[in-house]
Length: 456
Image (tube, rainbow, N blue to C red):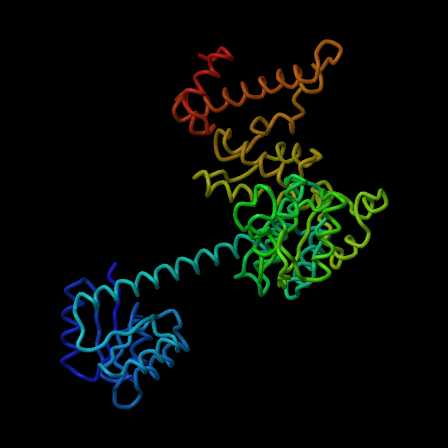
């Protein structure tokens, strides 16, 4: 696709030369002789780049560029300046020009500069598009719910987005705590700053302080280089302390000190580093109960509990389930290139009767699995995972007197695996390549499992 370049120069000869050079390179070119004409033309021509002479009668190059950038900040400008006017060109860059080139210029140098400017614009647009997609992905519209409890959650999110208040998100596993955290971050004034996630339950105790606050070279035996900790990485943005309830007591003391002082010192260092971060914490535990058990510090609980968002489990928001099912069908239709349109009434009844111990994450996985196995455009009872259907082997055939836990799990897993492979083979008309792709396993793995289960 041809890119548009606007040439603005009061010398007609320069306009003709540049128009010829750039047209030969495949660009679409328009020329004007005055800054005021350039401002008018930008609205209809929509240039990807402007080559602007600095010295023109009437509005000069910098003035014209500033007027254009008021309404079109995405358009890059390269200033054409006479030798000896370099200070003006530097001033133009300070005011937003991409670069400058002196007259007379070498054609190859000019084309190279134009190429860089257009690539810079392309990359900027790509970054902006990715940011927009991130904001859309973590918008409130992707947190689905019409139930009163979810409406209360939305109201809390709306209120805390505009503040820097510390937020504690409590809820069972799979309820969407991380999604809520990201919605808060990407709708706050920190949205363009770092978002750093720390899983407090996954860091070895002896490495916690180093992970959080960093260390200097030589601070301990294995500290061969300086390390920047998670808090410092999040400067200006948000740090998410996931599963904060898993922190051991001694780590809680150190975290509390940093949250109170808003300063940290790397291990082995002596410089106090000011912190400018927002803290959002999440846990699947009830921290008030953990305080009573003396496994969580009361003072840290008060420090984190500025604003608390309690995310309800799926079993307490039954009226949201049909909406969530529709949401996940739409999501995986796009991701799996499918065209599932609905869920049968009986299948929906099964889902509404199921307690969903894994909450929304569990429901999403179930819908994805059902869509892989569906025979047409409607999810039916037989497409649902066996746990939702009350698979009889799980309830009727367990005999702990005969078999131990590991043997029982192995046997039930094999039965589930066999049924999934049978359904996938049926859906793919026994085409093994397509079946392996659907199940996201290799052909070799599929052949081995078919042999194991006597499906050859």
